[in-house]
Structures are given as structure tokens and as C-alpha cells.
Image (cartoon, rainbow, N blue to C red):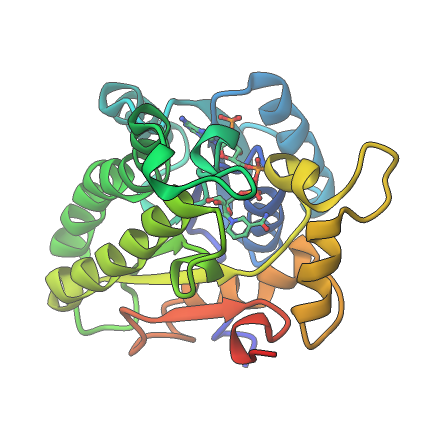
Length: 284
Ligand SMILES: NC(=O)c1ccc[n+]([C@@H]2O[C@H](COP(=O)([O-])OP(=O)(O)OC[C@H]3O[C@@H](n4cnc5c(N)ncnc54)[C@H](OP(=O)(O)O)[C@@H]3O)[C@@H](O)[C@H]2O)c1
């Protein structure tokens, strides 16, 4: 079994590896043997992630893990990071697209009408979650993966490349008020399926993970009050979650490593693994 879940010698890129969920996924990939490129805009958080991962695996920064600054909605910036990663770490076999998030003015205030939603906020959320979250990274890193497979392996062998897009449970069931984000994540799921079909015979598998509610930078204000107590909305969410709690970032590790490892998930593409404590499985 251990050979199925082994990424020894492979390079994994985690865009959004400077964040809460992406950071935990980067930890999981590194612990499974991958050399990890953490990609994001925030150099301070990037350095902290590199230090944490190097310590976790007992490796050296620059050899087993590195930070590569890039803005996911800027193709040239991604291309430059991609070139550096290839020359410093080697060919990329795994791409995790974890850059994403919401912005407050793209969420309808309580009682507000849908018609009041601003277009600028809507476009920003789509830009981040769909364009930067999937489209551009898949074009930039996916192109290199296709070239790698064409040069080195038969697409039918279990040594394919893997792309994991982070969608959201709200892409399947739109959350009240969170309109632009839910719609953008629904598009992430659709694009995941499109790409899985497009690249299925070319050795690149494309899947999604849909987390439910995991406290992170981007949603802390929604889930908790300033004094650290649960907000009304946070309480409603836990009340609707069969497991009666929020998720912990490390609970994404198993699905991440499964989807990343070509031997473990060689016939899995176009799928969406939902990790939400049962939230999407029940109604009141
Ligand atoms: N937390 C949850 O409950 C939850 C639930 C469902 C889905 N998700 C999804 O999970 C993913 C990770 O979110 P999180 O909860 O871990 O939030 P987070 O801690 O705020 O992380 C967001 C990440 O996105 C990166 N990012 C944002 N804009 C970027 C840009 N233009 N270019 C490059 N990187 C960018 C940030 O990196 P820099 O700041 O360094 O650029 C950061 O690493 C997102 O796609 C989010 O939508 C989260």
C-alpha cells in the first residue's frame, strides 16, 4: 500500500500554499515525499510555510521546498514562477489550485436584494476563484504537464500528472447571501469536469476537493465574533453540520494525497471529493 501513496521525487505546486487550507495540503504532499513549491503573493507567509515544511520533513529549504511569489490572476507572473520551479525543483507532477476566497461586498447584506449586488465585486470574485483559481494555473502548469507526459510516459501508465482544484461545498448548494462566491465555485466544478475530459487521454487527471466550513483568514469574521465566540452564522452552520463542528485543515490531507498519487487514483478523473462533516448531505 505504501507504494500507492508515495510522491517521492515528484514536484508538487500549491498555489495558495501560503494560506490555511493550501498550507495543510502542502504539508501533506511534502510528508508523502514530494518536493513542494509554495506559491502565493505574501512573501512573509511564504517564508513561514517553507520553514514549517522544511522542519516537518527534515529537509532543506530550496531543495525539498521553496516559495515562489506569483499573482494567480496574472498569467505572466505565473509563467515566471512556473519557469523558476521547473529549473530549480524539476518537472511539476502535481498542481493544487488553492488560491481563492470571497470579498465582503460580493456577499448580500442580510435582507438585501439580489439586484443590489455590485458588478465590480462579482467580477473580482470570479477573477480570483475561476480565472486565478483554475483557468490560468491550468493553462500555465497544465501545458508543462502535457509536455512532460508526452515526452516521458504513456498516458495510460500510472505515472500521470494530477491537478486538484479547490472548489467548495457552496459550489454545489449555493449558500444564502454568498452569491458570487458560490457561483464562481460552481464554475470551478464545471471547469474541472471539462478539463478532465479534455486531458483524460493525455496523462493529466483533473479533480476537485470541496471543503465545507474550515476556519481560515478569509472567513474568520463570518464564523466568529471579535471576542472569539461563535457568531450567529457560525452557530447556524454548526447546527446544520451532522458532525457538529467545523473542519480542521489537516482533514484535507488524505484526499489530497489520494488524488495526487498516480498509483492510488490512476482511474480517477473529473471527480469532486466533498469534505464537509456531512453538511451537504442533509436538510432540516
Ligand atoms: N476555509 C473554508 O472554509 C473554505 C471552504 C471551501 C473552500 N475554501 C477554498 O479553499 C481555498 C483556500 O482558502 P483558505 O480558507 O485556506 O483561505 P486563506 O487562508 O485566506 O488562503 C487563501 C489563499 O489564496 C491565496 N491567494 C489569494 N489571492 C491570490 C492571488 N491573486 N494570487 C495568488 N494567491 C492568491 C492567498 O495567498 P497570498 O495572500 O499569499 O497571495 C492564500 O494562500 C480557497 O480557494 C477557498 O475559496 C475554503
